[in-house]
Length: 381
Image (cartoon, rainbow, N blue to C red):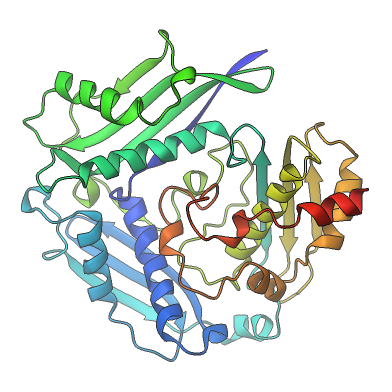
């Protein structure tokens, strides 16, 4: 059976991703400076539109952070430095509306309970070396390459905003070829479409997508409207948490609905989703299944999950019940245990805000380690 599966990603200059980065940069700054990291609480929501960045939400900390300065430095690093972009780090307004976290929530969190209710999902598959779905991994690598090419020279015709979309053809569940690659790249107005398309294909797509996945029938779409000059917050409003499928599995794995960026790890929206990925990746790395999905659900203020289930989609070497039994023996799903196991009380979150939270083997993310393989195999027997 043939089917085509599509995933997308966006560059660091995309308005939604600007907001994710701002929210996570605030959290990182607290972990760098607050000596009592266990007491740090954040739920930072950012919005950006023409000429302004609004940083709001809740924060509990003992230190002062210059949020406007943090925002401007981040925008500068992203590349919003030229007046012709109509949005620059020097001239945009930065408004902050941050207050303390509710004491009602703290009642449950301070004793080790979950910071909210909800369900979180983790997913892993053998179809890539990162044990991630192929469409989302290729989409991430393409926009990362797009950003890297832009940053190679100060006067590059590429601008900060951009998107990718990759459609992969699967045959009997195995990825065989790339059917379509779509790149929307913000660029200077003097660049012609023919020149841009040739550049994107030769300098971005072909060096990124494995050659054996491309063939004569692969379709390349570059700036399909014919023009992408106005971009970033000048063209579109961005909000924290609006790219949750980009952040996770590109639509191939389920999502509980809660975003990650701006949330400290007492919020299980983030920490339990990382734990679920950690579990799923170890299960697949242990060859207990070719692909697996795990759901974990919590009640606010309670330590233990209210439910856990595993689905190996019929690829398990033993029953899903047997795998789940082993998982429960090897992993501790209490929020404080997750935070300790995955080393979550440290500055690392800005690095997660672009190009995916999962499959990032170039980063020191503990949830991407496969150090529980031997224990899982032993428990399954």
